[in-house]
Length: 325
Length: 263
Ligand SMILES: Cc1cc2nc3c(=O)[nH]c(=O)nc-3n(C[C@H](O)[C@H](O)[C@H](O)COP(=O)(O)OP(=O)(O)OC[C@H]3O[C@@H](n4cnc5c(N)ncnc54)[C@H](O)[C@@H]3O)c2cc1C
Ligand SMILES: Cc1cc2nc3c(=O)[nH]c(=O)nc-3n(C[C@H](O)[C@H](O)[C@H](O)COP(=O)(O)OP(=O)(O)OC[C@H]3O[C@@H](n4cnc5c(N)ncnc54)[C@H](O)[C@@H]3O)c2cc1C
Image (cartoon, rainbow over all chains, first blue to last red; front, side, top):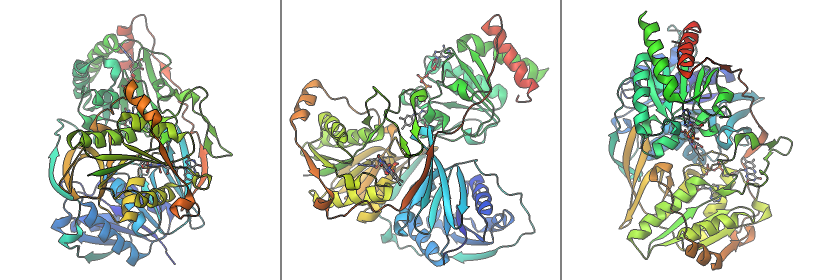
């Protein structure tokens, strides 16, 4: 009988446990039953105790230089082996670059199916109920999966990580990668990073985002200044990224990043459902838009109807004054 | 002669006003919006664009458009033919209409095996209706082929496919041997728009029909049950900041955010 929840944790590039791991462990805990956390990577062994403190009963670590960066063909083989041995009832991934790529492949290898980008998970008996946005966020669908393991990926910041309990212990199992060179068919030959200055969008407490209403790339200058004053980061809509007004790395939304700042200031953004999909967990949205009918106001806690060019400079001055005063 | 298969589907227009989006909760279906025509799923026409860019370089490339869906999907196939694709194949059978993503991939794989051997199979990164983003990967696994997801550039030369993938904070270059599956993202660029002459030519082109029995399958073998479909509650009480001038409104906003301890 398949039982328990198995989560695929992730590490950050600088060797910390990625926040998504805590969220996955939080979701696993809410489902109940024994929780296994899998860590694949290079230099991840030291993170096992952290997983234990966040609620893992067992941690399976595969620490190998080959796994330093995500490599689908290697990861899927190891994932398949681990899942077949552990025989979990539910397998969870984050809706991260890794989860997006790996979860559907693993589902096929395990002869089951997957629900992607879920915002709510529960159990009805031993049947997983996985709720996920679809139609660009306009609708929600609740799925169940007729096979095991029942696999789902979880949208960022939906579940809170459990409060860490350093005294918790977990059984830690080390496995070798055991993946032959010839198993790797799609090979990563190079990687380029787009450096973003200042605060990372995903971690920023404040995000100031701009859309087509800025009128051109130069419109982002005052937004960058505002973000700096507020200690935040700059985001953008797909419309402006597609036009080359701002780097793709700043795109917020369904096909961009999910952000969860305490404050999100949307300037010249209409609020298309696909954009809103990236800020669905944000409680405090400020909308500055000259069209009173714009959809963004539906989700905004504060709104100003008007030309941003008149609003933003005065707003910024006042913020400066309040911050220094 | 390189052969590329592009998997495309049709979706309700995602740019339609949000206020017109309605769901029949009992039937678990999205209602068509009166007067607004469905469109080819955006990422799928971008996949066709990727194929055409390869054909622009290697002229004897053949591009086959493959779709699974009801009668109306024919318009989407025609659109892709008008963009410059060579062949259209439409799997159209009521027995296959309610396929989930697994069954969709299984049916597409069965159809691809019936075609001329493919060197490259292109899909969109996700369908613009159900947004699952899994059919490409599932198809690759079923067919035992390498898969590269979320591409912004696809090149094919001498049995090797080179893909530039979009990462969250950059890009990576991946090489895979043909045949393989690649899913395409919007960073590739806009799909070309058909010229009138091409639309007329495409109108005359035959679209090959396939049924479940042609493929030797007896229905959609779903692995997922859709338990519910609904429109989420989103209503938020908005505090509109009003003042004699927008400048004053801006200042007032800062004060209100301070009071709410948000700055
Ligand atoms: C499958 C799919 C995935 C997508 N993924 C994403 C995604 O991840 N992220 C994303 O953002 N979009 C995404 N989109 C695109 C999305 O549908 C919208 O097209 C896009 O978000 C619109 O961007 P915008 O708000 O900048 O532009 P617009 O919709 O053009 O809105 C501009 C707004 O600016 C306002 N404005 C104009 N001038 C001024 C002024 N002077 N002062 C104040 N306001 C002004 C206008 O009233 C308008 O509301 C996706 C679309 C699809 C189909
Ligand atoms: C239980 C259940 C019942 C359903 N019933 C219906 C129904 O009655 N009618 C209906 O329209 N949908 C139905 N669906 C949705 C249907 O499964 C999806 O439309 C389909 O799987 C593609 O959406 P996706 O998000 O899974 O695709 P994704 O994985 O996001 O698609 C990725 C890519 O795969 C390719 N692709 C996907 N679907 C097709 C296709 N049909 N033809 C060619 N290429 C394709 C495209 O290149 C696409 O960009 C149902 C889903 C479930 C779970």
